[in-house]
Length: 386
Image 1 (cartoon, rainbow, N blue to C red):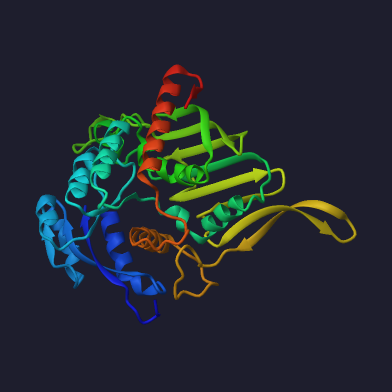
Image 2 (tube, helix red, strand yellow; image 1 turned 45 degrees about the vertical axis):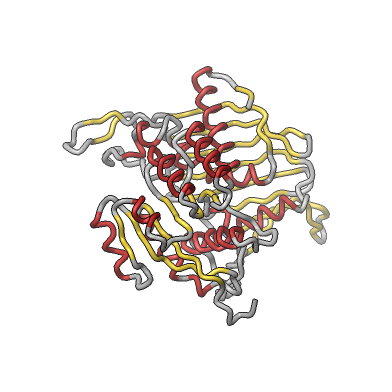
């Protein structure tokens, strides 16, 4: 495809006009930053049960319809692919409706409120293969994360000694923060923070083929009450933090894998972190320092000899799909959202060409199974097989 070819037009609809809905709309507006992408998306329709939430989208010229009923949007004939960002308890109904309408689906995590719901969504996708389904997980699309993934895939680690994958917030550090749906299991799910943040932490380990054998879940309910609408305390019955001590395996060899999902992690606003250390090398990356990748090696130092060294490398802005942005600039959250959508639409088009892709329904379902194993482990106070 030539640089002048704008790609095949694909109409995008959004269900859920909140924070992430606006982020996706902004990413689509930045599409010309991508070089030679096979698809040209246009945001044509937006749906939210709150009419006031739809007003922000009036500034986007390509939006031809706004809806308060998602079934009307799906029946409008003006949408090819749908992004859905709603409460976890609504996932199953809305995702199945999108799939049965024959639309492509980029779903928000955790892909259903629990494993049963995820299985129901997957069965719908199997009945409708024309609906290309993936799950949102944008952090691995940072260039530094891609460097780390490629480093591990290269075999440079040798035998893996240990690894860590984490997603860390501090948004619930304020004990006076009012209750909302993410702090109530009826809407967020029994897995709590593991539903909210879990796939972010599991996406890369699962994609690397690190198969969990057993895990021990340490779950924390740190703030059991939060102010309700009238200021009176309301039970906050979701887990705030989860640390999973996992026995994983790669190439037949076992190693400890720490998987962390925390809404109360002082010092972190929105950090994704990954580290893997082996007998022959190591790599680590955190979105807290988006340009920095650290690589471990043994180096020869003149006058001293062979020594261990963590080397600091600037990753720049190159990720999954090439962009017009100079390679010396740093990538941010909005860039990772753009890269995730570039990967989704390219894979839907059959043009991903081996690049890193969005989380699959199978990976989302596996994350649910691991979350449920963590709940069982916490109840038993011991490790459980998975």
